Amino acid sequence: QVIDATSLGWGTRVKGFIACFVIGCLCSLLGTCLLWVPRKGLMLFAVFYTLGNIASIGSTCFLMGPMKQLKRMFEPTRLIATIVMLLCLVLTLCSALWWRKEGLALLFCILQFFALTWYSISFIPFAR
Image (cartoon, one colour):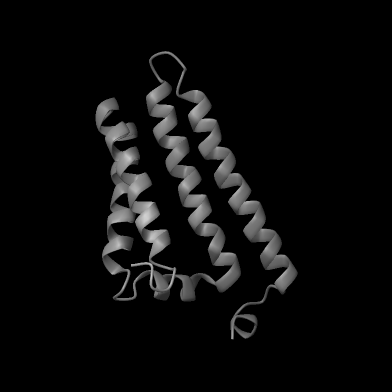
């Protein structure tokens, strides 16, 4: 079904997944390295860590397609996990870029980690 729904071949989709996932991991790693920059490090960490997580989540769109990804994300069994995860992503960026509250950005990064873990576990059968 996925092959019929997209115009990309399987090899191209796997390459897109790997590229997007690697970019996400590199952004998260870069954010961790930037954590030690004086005065701006925590904000840079929050932004790059969040962008890395968004890229990593987006990488799965290459494998199953964006519409199927959205349908699976908002299934009743993982609806709360998805909402909490997306809310944490948005609140992390807001606290780092808009509100400029370092402590709040760090708190939302920690919550983002747990929310993303909960969201990921929701895809494993019988793990909930």
